[in-house]
Length: 298
Image (cartoon, rainbow, N blue to C red):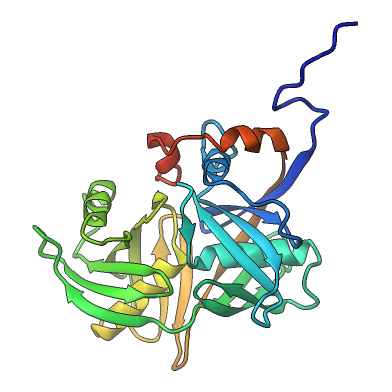
C-alpha cells in the first residue's frame, strides 16, 4: 500500500483549539495556553486573522498563567502580526473565554497586560441576550493638543497603555477613515490608533469611527472609546459617564477619579479547531493588503 503523505490540513494531525468572541463587533480569537506551550509566530497570527485564508479576527489573544500577582496574563497579537499593549474589548472577550473555560474562581478577577494589571468583571446573560463584561482600563493620560496636517479637526493625544489620537469633527459622514488613519501613522514612530468622534446623539454620548494600529478600521475599539471619552470630557463636551456609539454597538465609559472603566456586551461566537500544521505553514504568511486590513469595515 502506498504511504499517504500528510498535508498540513490532514485530519490525523493534532489540532489547536481556540474560541471566537466579539465585543460590539470587535472580534478576537482566544487561545488558552496556561503552560505557554503554543507561542504564535506573527505570520501564524496573520493567517488566523485573515478573513479569506484563515478564520478571521481583529486579533489573537493567548491566555497565559498569571504574572505580577494577577490571576491570568493576556498576550495579544494584532491582525498584522504585531503585538499590542492593551485592548479593552479584547480583555472583555478574554473574560468570557476564561469564565467559560473555568479558569477563574469568580466572575471578578485580574489580568496582567503590558500596560499593567487590570481588574475584569463578568456577568452572564440572564436570558438569551449577550453576556456583559467590564474592565478597569487604568488611568487615561491626556497628552498635547494636536492638529493633523491639512485638517481643521481638534485633536488630542491620549495614552491608554497604547497610543491614541482623538479627533473631534462636526459630522462623521464622508470621513475617509482608512485614508486618514493610514496617513497619520507616518506622523508617529510606532504608529497610533486614530479615533474620529462627533458629539451625540443625545447628552453625554459620542459617535465614533476608528482606525486601529495594526488592524485597520474596526467595528469597535475599547481603548479608543475610553480615550475618546476622556478627551471629550476634558474639552467639556460630555460628563463622566459616556455612551460611545461604535459602528458595531454601544460601549459605556465611566471616568472615575482613579481609573477609566469600560463596559459592554460580549458575545461567544464559536469554538474553532485549527490544524497545528496549518499554523506552521502560516509562519510564512505575508502581511499583504488582505492580512493587514483584516479588521476593515465591510
